Length: 313
Ligand code: CUA
Image (tube, rainbow, N blue to C red; front, side):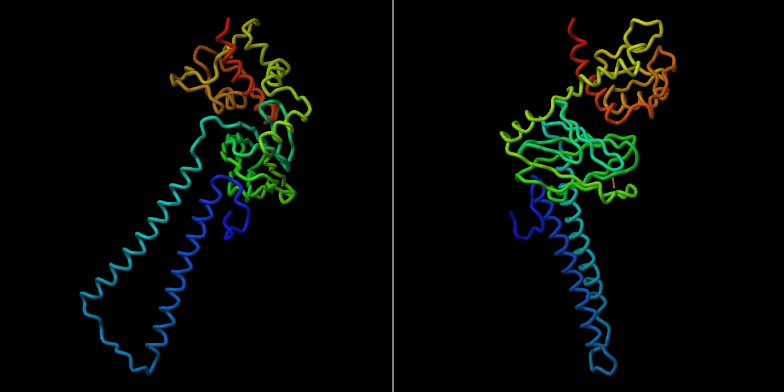
C-alpha cells in the first residue's frame, strides 16, 4: 500500500486512481505556483518607479513565447485527459467470469441479493481477489453506490440498470455510502462491504439462511403475479412464450428487431405497450408499482435460466 494514500487501496483499480488523482493535484499545484509566482514577480519588478526595462520585446520573440506556452500547457493537459480516459475505459472493462450480485437501492437502504438466494441489507460480503459485477436498480429516486476504499462510485437511476465491476484486493470491512442526496435519511443510507478470504467467504455463505435461489423466487412470482395465466400457452389469451426468450432476438410489431436482454425484459414488465412483439395485441397491463425492483431482479433471473430449460425437451 502506498503511504501517500489517505484511505486503504482495497480494490485493483484504487492505486491507479490515486496515482492519477495525485498527479492531477500536483500538476494543478505546479501551475498555481507558477502563475502566482509570475504575478508577484512582475508586480515587484515593474512596480511604479522601478528602473525595469519597459521597451517591447522583439516581435518574433513575442510570437514564440505565446505559441510556446500555449502549446505546452495544451499538450500537457491533453496528455492528462488521455490518461484519465484510459483509466476510465479500463474500469468499464468487463471481467470474463465475474460473480454477479444484484443491488436494489431504495429510500433508505441497500438491498443485496446473491445469485444463490442469500440476501443482505446495508451489507455486502465478497471474496478476496474475485471479480464482482454489481447489477443495480433503484426503486424510487437517484442514489449513488460509493465505496471510498475501492475508489468506485456509480449513480443508480430509477428506470435503468447500472453495472459496476470491481475486484477487492484487501480483506477487511469498508464503508459503503450513498453519494447522491436522496431524501431525509440520505446521510444514514450507509453500509459495509466485507471482503473475506475465499474459504471464509464460503463458510459465511453456508451459514446464511436458505433463501430461495433468485431464479426459484422468480418462478414463484411468475405464477403468483399471474404472468403464467397468459404466457404459459395454456389459456385462451395469447401472449408470447417466454421459454428461451432471454438473450434472443425478438421481432416487434413496428418491424424492429430487439434483443431480449435485461433492459428489454424490464421495460416489457413496466411498460408493456411500448415495444409489442410482432403478431400480438398490446393488451398486457403495466406492472409498474405492482412489482418491486427485487421482484424484477428475481423474474429476470428466472427468465435467464428458463432460457436454458427451454431448449431441453
Ligand atoms: Cu440514497 Cu442518498
